[in-house]
Image (cartoon, rainbow, N blue to C red; front, side, top):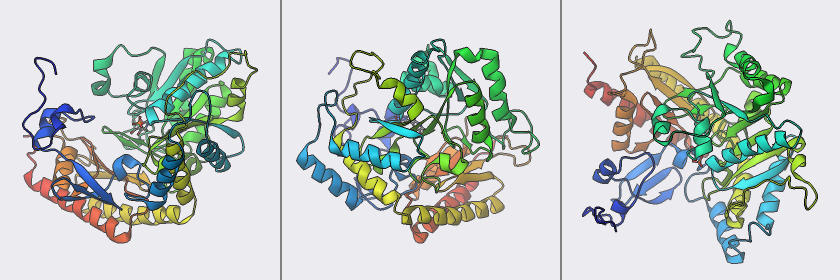
Length: 460
Ligand SMILES: Cc1ncc(COP(=O)(O)O)c(C=O)c1O
């Protein structure tokens, strides 16, 4: 303990004063802590016995809810066998089996899986791999990575450099160089003040200009989430957006990376966002739902034309440099196998699509009744609403009085947890949620908006 530090704040929760909880101001968190002790299906119970509906599936990860027996049992069985298998000298059966099954659900051009333990690490891996691929194929000057404003690719330095949001980044600058940003395909707040489809999907077409202006011989990769869901924004692209990006990346030999950390494994009602948009990347990063949220597991899934350049004879020196301790961890991969079996079984995706319609119906009904719900959008069970102070101008509420945060606080008081940003609310519940559970989540959000409208202090 440092002289100025404190081992306890006298809290009734020992250890709380010694913790940092991500994205939380700890002094405030300690005053009203949420300490979860149990979960079952869509429900969580905290240490005080309060019950919450998990409308965000952990953090868009618990595809089958809490307490999923097949995953728990697969992990337990693997723990009994072996828990860590010499990650830089050996591999293990669950890792091989999961790689094999993952490749089975991808188009045949995808051949190779690189496991890691989290989404940020997967994106770091993909971006490093893109640079190395170009170096190993005669284009050593290709190093720049393009991403989109409002995107979130993770918290580690490289992933953060591709992420946007001054508030998140400023404290860690200077960040790695070689990262460029373009405007996202946000039709509701079009950065070019155009209207779809007359706009000609300029937000995608302009990427060609950006690459030409930068010099295609300097651009390594373009990284994009199929749907952007961050605390600042909720962006669903027009249907042809990714097809256009695919063509542009092919034209300039730029590695197209999809960050499907959130959108993968059924979240959008198809197995991957790439299936929804009908255009596949060169490298897809996946995390969260890959293990149903039960184990720190993520991966980069790679096209053969890229991964084959990493094969090489013993002294070729073209291997990928990483060496993460938990890469391909057998217990995490056992969870992944049990999760993949469930999500590819058919019933989960069917339910996701059905509940998506149900939930969207509820949200659209709220938009009909509440002027502040300016927009409802999303795919599958990644559905959100944007709050606006003025529907005609689509103007946001002031940042110092964010309506979305107020709704989030009210919903939590009423026992519902969702992704509440300053101006957006996003649902990403378990894909196995039932009709009643979806109705209950929507009813609580509805009541929370109504209550917030009663208490919100509008700017003069
Ligand atoms: C789209 C996206 N990419 C990357 C990440 C980072 O993943 P992780 O938190 O597992 O490092 C997240 C996390 O929320 C995400 O939503």
